[in-house]
Length: 122
Image 1 (spheres, rainbow, N blue to C red):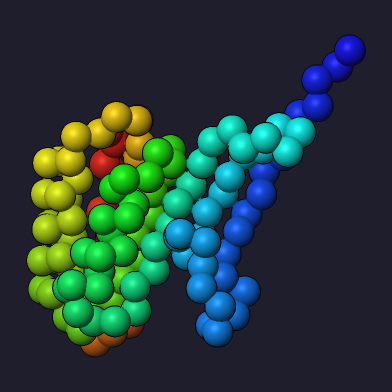
Image 2 (image 1 turned 90 degrees about the vertical axis):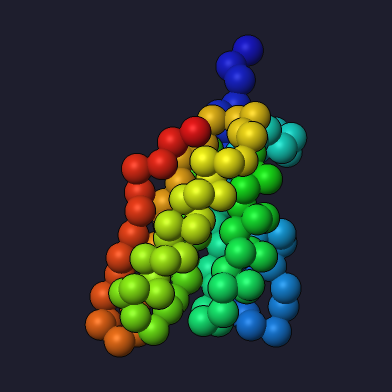
C-alpha cells in the first residue's frame, strides 16, 4: 500500500477584519489530515513602535517552525538597524529547542528600500 504524500497548507489572514491564526502567515504540513509540523511562520508588524515589533517577534521565537520571518518598518535606516540588532540579540539569547533559520526584514520608509538580516540559524 502506498502512503499518501504529505499535504502542505498555507494559512493567512484573508482580510483585515479577521484575526490571523496565531501568525500572520503559516505553512503547516499535514498527512491524511494529521498535523505534522510547521514549516514557516511569519509575522508582519506595520506600526513603527518597537513594542509592537517585539510583541510579534516573541511569538516567532517560541514557534517550532523551521523558517521564521519577521517583517517590520521603520522611518530611517538607523532605526531599522537598531531594531535588527536588538532582534538578533534576542535570537542569540533564546534557548532554542528546535533547529530554525531566521529572516529579519525592515522596510525603511524614508529610503524606500529593505534592509535585512538573513544569516541566522539556530
